[in-house]
Amino acid sequence: MAELTATQGGADIENGTYPATLLGISVEAPTAKSPNQKEWLKWLFVIDDASPEGVEMTAPSSMRLTAKSKTRAWVEAVLGRQLANGETITLEDIKALDCFVLVTHDETGFARIETVMPLPKRNTHKGVLKPAPPVPPDGDDAGVAV
Image 1 (cartoon, rainbow, N blue to C red):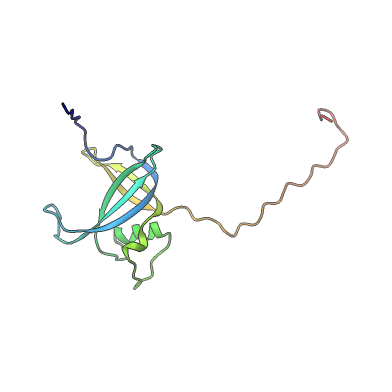
Image 2 (cartoon, helix red, strand yellow):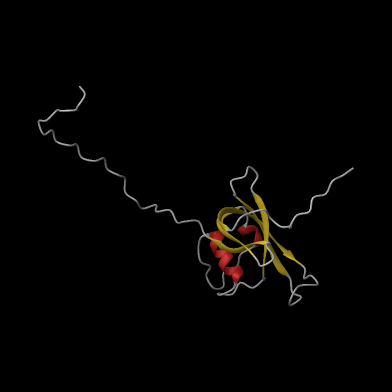
């Protein structure tokens, strides 16, 4: 006989900031619960929670790519750069990209992706580190193995 185990539902992950990979974004039709009955974007991430397989989570956003929209902030985060006004991108341009995500639990305990953040910028203009100058001998060889 099959056994069923009651769970809270959603991802089993603690609050926190995690490295993640955006697997893709799909356009979804409005649901009965959609506030404005417009198409929306469904973001699919795999989150590195230190488990072997990671945790898959989805998050919604609107189709708007305005300066202050969540969608634009998230797109810019995964691309690691700001979009120019008038720039056009496709959903294919923004998949398989690494980022960080902030996971929080709502009042019912359901885990949600609150924010998507860019990876830290690498400083590619660093000079080569120079070795430390040799220490001049001071004439005291005490404690030095020869």
